[in-house]
Amino acid sequence: MDATRVVLRTSDEPMIDALRRAPALSDVDEAGLLARFAAREIVDSSGSPIDPTTATTAGAPIYLYRDLPEEIAIPFELPVLHADEDIIVVDKPHFLSTMPRGVHVVETALVRLRREFGSDLISPAHRLDRLTAGVLLFTRRPQVRRDYQNLFADRRVDKEYRAAAPVRADLRLPADVANRILKDSSDLRARVVDGEINARSRVELIDGPSEATGGLAEYRLTPHTGRTHQLRLHMAELGIPIDGDPLYPVVCPELAALSESGDFTRPLRLVAHRLEFDDPLSGRRRVFRSTRSVV
Image 1 (cartoon, rainbow, N blue to C red):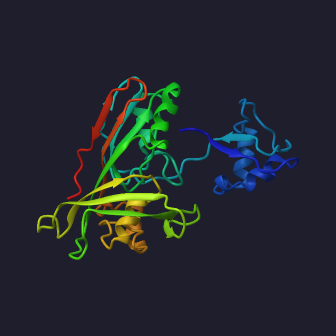
Image 2 (tube, helix red, strand yellow):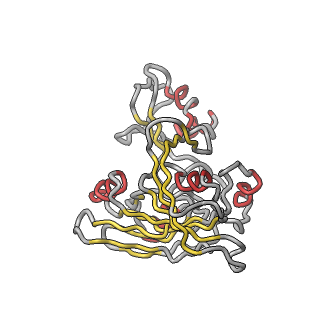
Image 3 (cartoon, rainbow, N blue to C red):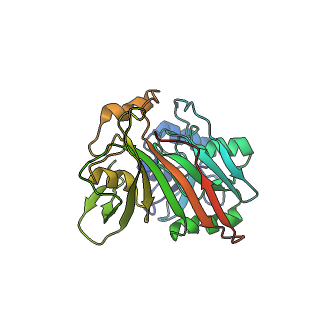
């Protein structure tokens, strides 16, 4: 995994004081910081060790490694759908984070792939929510990273998701949902607000409910934008929330707590089913599909 990067916000104060207040290091106490200083593990952008009394410079990045938290093992494989010298495409399982964040570090797709392929150069070209399964693309070389990341940033990737959700007899489908979504870092949930539209999704019914699916239907979801939790929120707005969603339409702490205690029996039934794009290097059309089912 990569070192934690902390960007200093102040100038001319002791480094130890600035790092003690850094939100990214809230789980590291002063003794832990001093131990890292003593071990010469806190460095500047050139890799030179820093003294705790060194004066800060606003905007300068500082790097250090954090202690790994204790993690519950995610008991699902990470199948590789495709690998070449430029990219790796995987079929991510539910509950596995794309990359290290919070208490999820080792049990992430990024760390698993770096270990499997023996390379610290692997990097995600985009992200999937921890609870969402499906097709996820990584780059293998820094030289090509921007080309593939820009595909997603510029919305040049055709995406198709599948979801399992209830049926509303009065809902006419297909339906196009368009509104404005905001997501604050301090809030677990995204929300719909007034203002210019920034989120568009299309919802189509693939197959109706049956006894075999527990009364749930299968839907095809096509996001035309990429806001955080967009599909989950749009399905809830239509009155057909995705099965297993702990946040929408209302927060369900009991459901959210299951996976954190090692119970993986209630996944969010949402899968990134297909990624399709013109390769930025070869120009060849690429199509990758998940093998995972939501019903």
